[in-house]
Image (cartoon, rainbow, N blue to C red; front, side, top):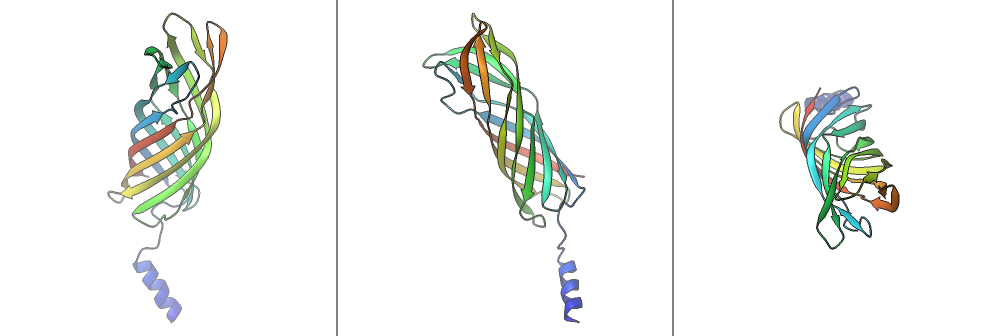
Length: 192
């Protein structure tokens, strides 16, 4: 009898997870990529922001896989101690495995880790030909989803992404630009 009463109470208070195995979340919002300040002895890469979106698939109530995508980020390139000398754009697709701590609560923190592949394009340097190699590196994140309605939520996350690009100016190597940014995002999400 006690077991039956306990089971009924648990069901009455809704112990099921907000997202369960097989559920899919979509988040849309904006992110700022903030590179570390000492990127390279000669050049520095400034911050950039754009529209970001991601899809998360839940394998269990707590374990999920997320793919981050974005419109291109644009970054100004400055000479160390000087002004703007160029710009570049990049796309940062990132695949992460996430662990969601409290899947049955209205506020759901999570952590994630995975791989990032950054694609650089439209590199431009005043008076010279700039080339940045694509980068493969690890990524880590912390985030939180906060319920707005039964299927809509607010999301905030912070990521660290290991981005290091070999750079060439007029086909001559100038070494590795260590961008290694913190990425700050705010999104609205939907559960399917």
